[in-house]
Length: 261
Image (cartoon, rainbow, N blue to C red; front, side):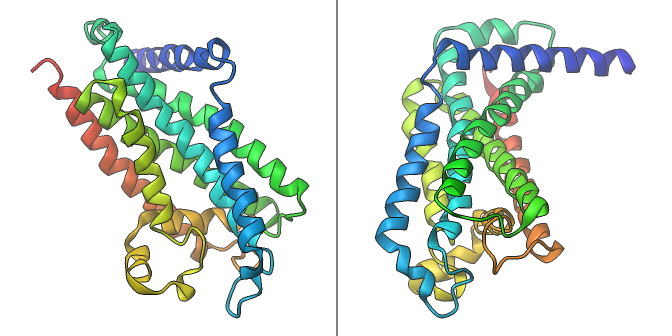
């Protein structure tokens, strides 16, 4: 049993290292995961900054409300890249060679997913640093900051599972835009820009059923003064992350098992 665990860890580590080589091979590959969320953050903060003065808004700084969203977006894009890279390996025939190795098939996904989580720290930290430079404070302190990174890593893991699922299903790099659009939809159909009590219409009805709403609440403990670090603001986000990863992971493994059948 010990030997099996050690072998699994060795295979996962090897796949992790291989996936991280992408950072060195494509020097500008991380820029889109940073720039796109920053553009949304700065643009929306400047255009809609006065929303923070609305009655019932949990903070007087709209940038403080948007900053965790931008961090999670960057982490989600980094996770989605795992699917795009997997689709490339499938198209080039490399993944078929990996499947013929004695390594358990789930480990062929575990390494890239863990690598994407490692990469996601870069955009999340860079975006957070820009937000702090513009005057957004860490009202949640260390506990809030920890919650933000947990939310970012969870978002990345779910996005990576989503990307791997689509890559294994369609087996082409053309699936890349669909991966990114899935991340966008998960973000926009939530409390991304407005608190739940202020949402109206169909979006106000749908947002409570979107798991990402609760992941955002988890992350917003870092910068939103009205969302203080507490177990009540934490456990729904953890459950949402666990649910998304479990469902998307199971579907991805199912798609992996169907390759070659």
